[in-house]
Length: 109
Length: 111
Image 1: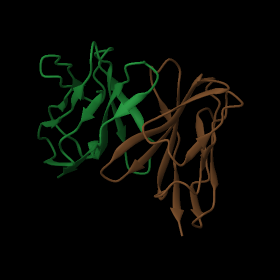
Image 2 (image 1 turned 90 degrees about the vertical axis):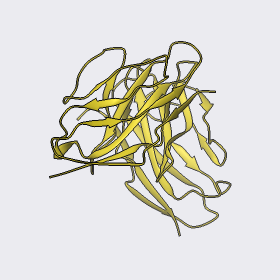
Image 3 (image 1 turned 90 degrees about the horizontal axis):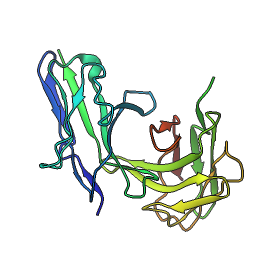
Image 4 (image 1 turned 60 degrees about the vertical axis):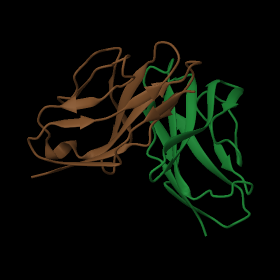
């Protein structure tokens, strides 16, 4: 079965602290994974995808096939990082995205 | 302004009524999707369409119907068979599932 699990509903950190948003997946074969972000009053948008191995707004995510994880990390959180974060997996047919339940990140000063 | 547009932003429906949510895109994307977003549930796929005149059921299609008569448009009808229709509905489009572009969403409330 294809599934994305984000175990934390809410993650609260202080400004400047490291952040790790967890994402685990269940998939047969080589997965294609994404992180999407939804800032307050804005539409959901792509943050990064594992294929491009990019760093956006200081965030990185490494695919760990052994642990079936794709955790999102940032060394120093900023208040503007406060948002809802969704991990997503392209389905086996390659036709749609399967989303996790999301994690709300709250960064306070 | 290019992108994906959902209308209306807010919609109220009486129990037993059908209601149609609009989704239009001018990105020339082949694929379009409808997701339902509930607190604590994440995004769940209702229907998707890879090409005009073709669409497939997602994980929670019961009580919903769609059409894809034009590339730009993918309306979603919430029928009276949907037992719990109050939710936030998101439409998206993509080209080869590389990146999904989302609309602003429609909040449907049953009164």
